[in-house]
Length: 115
Image 1 (tube, rainbow, N blue to C red):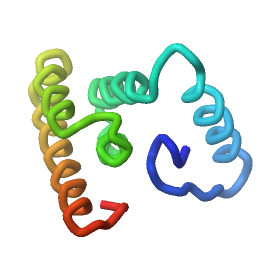
Image 2 (tube, rainbow, N blue to C red):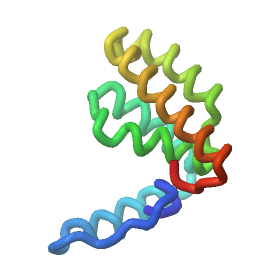
Image 3 (cartoon, rainbow, N blue to C red):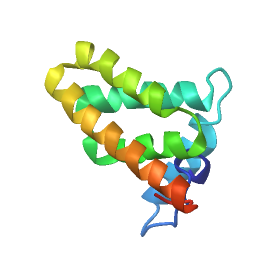
């Protein structure tokens, strides 16, 4: 999970969190056939379509931090998905993308690893 999201994750109460992290990030994200970038693109598209804005910001910032997607890539995703997911979702995504880019650029300028 730390490799996907670029920050350390600590276990939560009960078994659910541990099983989720172990299976989803240990097995599903590591399967052959798709790159981390491919998986991230699919997940961003799904999150936009489903309106999962609460965790979409984490994906966008992690994509920039890990180098899976560039600022230009994210801006192109906004244009593309706005036409398929709808203009309101595209507009919301645009705001989130520009916020993530700004935070990433600020973190790079200050030498901070976490935006």
